[in-house]
Amino acid sequence: MSDLPPMKATDKARRMLSALKGENTHETTPVWAMRQAGRYLPEYMSYTAGTDFFHNCQTPERAAEITLQPARLDIDAAILFSDILIIPQALGMVVKMHPGKGPQFDAPLLEVGNVEPLIAPLLVKYGAEKVAASQTLTHDREKQLGKDAVESLAYTREALRLIRQRLDGSMPLIGFTGAPFTLMCYMVEGVSKANYSGARRWFYDCPDVARKLLALITNACIELLLMQIESGAQIIQVFESHGGELTPQVFEEFERPCLELIATTLKKLHPEVPVTLFARNCLHSLEKCFASPYDAISIDCTVSMTDACVLAKRYGKAVQGNLDPCIFYGGPEVIKAHTTAMLKEAAAVLGTTPSGAPKSFVANLGWGMMPSHKPEQLQAFIDAVHDFTK
Ligand code: 1CP
Image (cartoon, rainbow, N blue to C red; front, side, top):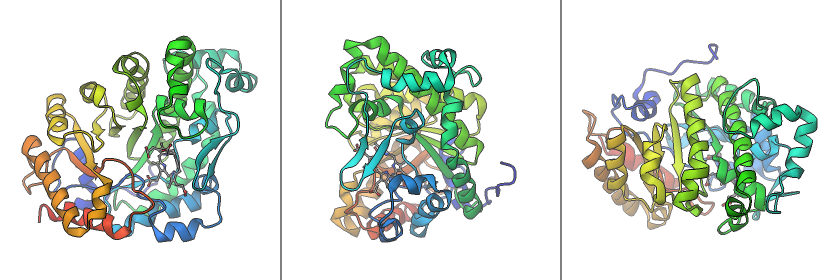
């Protein structure tokens, strides 16, 4: 990693890390957008036309090119172009991305309690001991199979190195994973679903199997994130996109321990790397998220900014979020008004840096960019964030 370019000393290069780490030495509020590399960008559409989605993730040169496309919009962080579904792939599942239809698994787990189709090949490949160890919620790099399993994702290493070289320290690079329950949803159902009841019933029907599956996924997530950090990722985000489907009890009993193990393991090995949790629709457990070992909580648009900032202050955490992506359809004036209001609301609770930026705050959307968005709309949001302290 030492041969990668160091971060420049400019405010732009440092503002995101300054906010996430609570240093608050930055002059301008950092901003980026989830799914900032994607279908709303004409250059993404032309570059990926006729190509397979996962081929682009797996080809470092192509992943690097796509990752850097949104840089022309003056974002303050790049996020690796990849997908959360590479973890199920590392565990041996076949997933394709169908344009317009989303992800499709060849052989989803489907049957309640049926993890055999997943486990059997792993036993052959890695041995019974490693597989058994990986099904308990602990992390041991040598005894568990996460490290071996994510070796098939080694293309990630080269992509991150290329991106860091090309960024040349101008802004930080974010690595990511899906959260264990969010990944379990896709692994069980095999496609995007409305409420993932097919996965959620496992918590009642076969809780022990659910626990084992989540432990296995957690181990793979940890090893992928370690691989990302060790190859140049400077910030990590965990996407809990479907955590809102869980009851507070199930979240507490099954998922929170997994999320905690991910953050504590990363913090132990790489304390300098901030770890963010995107807790979408997780109002049921918002305080628990802020009390967890994550450095920042990324909130969706259903969360009151004031409430989130009060919790962030209480637990010494940073907040990321949460402009409604639909506000983009209102035009530049509307985008500016809502963005300014959001920053003022955050600043009123969190306080400000000497230049007036809300402390420990990263501006983002409440969810991802949508294919019908226009780059100019994201640009208007970014400009409104940056102009706040001018
Ligand atoms: O700029 C970036 O953010 C690019 C990297 C990235 C990330 C962080 C992509 C590329 N996907 C993701 C995360 C991701 N993937 C999540 C978590 C964030 C969220 O909630 O949106 C999820 C749930 C997925 C799974 C996924 N990938 C779906 C299903 C979504 C659902 O509602 O069930 C789909 C359709 C994708 C495809 C995908 N991933 C990324 C892009 C640009 C696309 C569109 C693919 C295309 O058509 O080219």
